Length: 127
Image 1: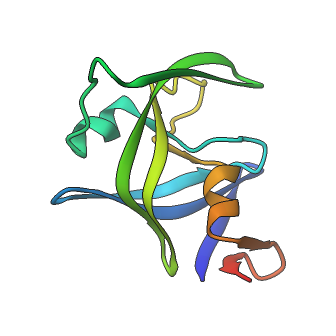
Image 2: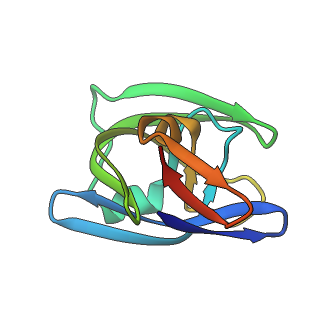
């Protein structure tokens, strides 16, 4: 179970990203059921030791805020309290969307961990 927060009409949760020996705790990662992919900022990727490589997949993500070119990386794990996914494919981009964000939790992560969003109790759980 992970607690969620409703702020300015958006849903946020804390997330821990792990790669190698590095862990980064993100306070208030955006939980976006309208986003098909999970995206982290290039600053967070740098903190995790992720660097662009010639064989990286280049993708594009688009939403209400526009379109962005991203690179795909695999991180060791992403954890939202008791919800955890290992060897997770994540998108890395500039994330210049007009609001301060470091991580967007997308449907790829939510479906992979069978997340249930309970807006009465303000929690994320699993089935």
